[in-house]
Length: 131
Image 1 (tube, helix red, strand yellow):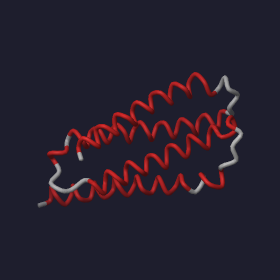
Image 2 (cartoon, one colour):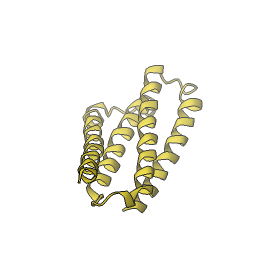
Image 3 (tube, one colour):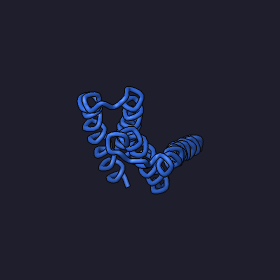
Image 4 (spheres, rainbow, N blue to C red):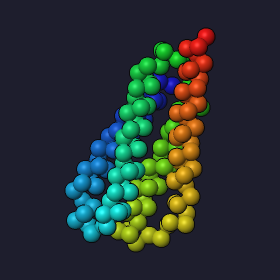
């Protein structure tokens, strides 16, 4: 499981850097409103930060004496749903897509999954160190 944390964490960080560069250099020249660019950057920030956190957890795997599959899945899928729904919603005017009704509700679901994954990981670790 630690390999999955590290591998997908690295992928999220890489995508965060690529998309962040795109936001900094491409979105403004494409005519996207500043509010949409700011939203895009929020999605990129969460993608990057989740990736970095996943790499840390993967690197510290031997410190945890419990299974990580549930936490990994919640963080992984939550990050994908949250970050990429925000990113897609932000650039939807450039793509001439009307997807707000579909993707709008996905963003908080993704956020809730990320919170659930990190929160339950936190609680399980607290229980482990309290023994």
